[in-house]
Length: 86
Image 1: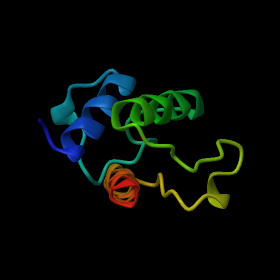
Image 2 (image 1 turned 60 degrees about the vertical axis):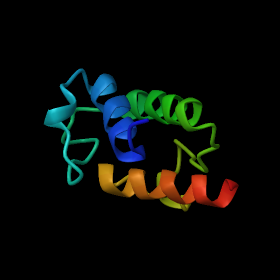
Image 3 (image 1 turned 45 degrees about the horizontal axis):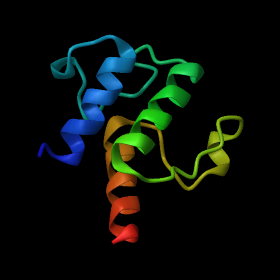
Image 4 (image 1 turned 90 degrees about the vertical axis):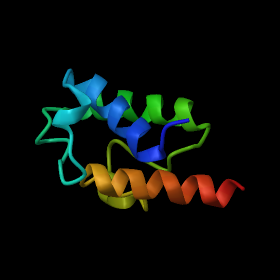
């Protein structure tokens, strides 16, 4: 099974219509051309892929504990959610 990082990058790359090799851990969703709708779709895809519930408010991202500022922060957030589940 591929790593959490690889799976998150795959989902984000698919959303951005990019090759996964074009997505780096330092990339922001804005860098990748992902808008607010793309963000919500990415979150849904990530929740489905990892069977987690992302504490995210699309209307107030700054009011969430889940950091979506970069690919690395999203990966870290997913890893934390998975760890809390087990």
